[in-house]
Image (cartoon, rainbow over all chains, first blue to last red):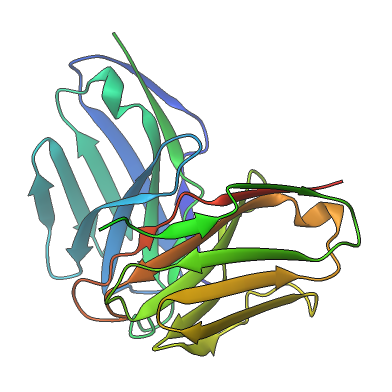
Amino acid sequence: SQKIEQNSEALNIQEGKTATLTCNYTNYSPAYLQWYRQDPGRGPVFLLLIRENEKEKRKERLKVTFDTTLKQSLFHITASQPADSATYLCALPHGSGNTGKLIFGQGTTLQVKP
Amino acid sequence: DAGVIQSPRHEVTEMGQEVTLRCKPISGHNSLFWYRQTMMRGLELLIYFNNNVPIDDSGMPEDRFSAKMPNASFSTLKIQPSEPRDSAVYFCASSPRLSGGRNEQFFGPGTRLTVL
């Protein structure tokens, strides 16, 4: 069955450093991958979508890579700030990707210390 | 736009009682999703609708759970009878479309359900 893995352990980094979060998947070839941010007590918020034919995508201080050979996506936050502290979820389409159904990873919690 | 609206934000009830959660999606969005989030299982899709029609309810845990979408601006998730293991945060999300580009999902603030 399709499986998504994100680091369950929290990532603690110092302000100004680059945070790198990992999303690994098995047993399928998704047409795209999405990243969401979730703050405590709130719903997830969409950040970025990257397609299988895109190696890299950037949005302000965020950068996402998508390696379909390694079956892995990396999510980078450069010049991190305490306000970046949150849980980050990756999501992949279920099956062929035409249904709109997403499967979410468990998320990785990032803590940026001043 | 106000975003996805959910009510109530918090619900505390006793085992055996009926619980109804409500959702108003973003105007113009064609798809609506109901999720449940717990520490153990993460974010799980329960059911989703496209153009008010249920497409996939394979995530609904039991017959005690039911969902309706009578029109494009309103959906309900009902649990009857509720059990303590139903305690979780329930999210509603909407999306402009199901597939292709721009199918990111917009989540509501969630309803925290506690069943005693």
